[in-house]
Image (cartoon, rainbow, N blue to C red; front, side, top):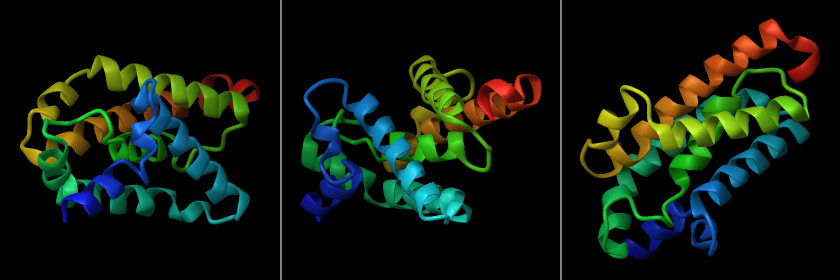
Length: 154
C-alpha cells in the first residue's frame, strides 16, 4: 500500500522534482486545470479537487510512513488540489491563472488562520486541509480581482 500511496500523493511522482516540489505540484495543478478547459469539462474542477482531497486524506498517512516523515516534500497532491480549488469556477485569462498560481503559492507558504492550525491535524487530513484553505482564500481573492479588474484577469 505504501508504494501506491506515494505514487498517488506525489501525483505520479511529480513531487520528486528535484527543486521546489511544492511549486512543481502547483504547476501540475495548473496543467490539469488547462486540460479540463481544453476538453471543455470545467464542471469537474471542484469535484476533482474534492476527490483529490479524499484520496490525500485516505492515503496521506501511508505515504508519510513510506517516506519516513510528516508532510514530506514529495507529497504534492495537496498542492494540485489547492490549485484546482483556487482556479475553480472563475473565468480567467492567462494573467488571471498566473495570479492565481502566485496567490496560492504565497498563501500556502504563509498559512493564514486557520490554515496553520489545520496543518496540525493528524495524517492526511492535516496534509490536505491547509492547502484547501489556502485555495479557498486564493479563490476569493481571484473573484475579487475579477470584479475589480475584469479586463486584466478575465
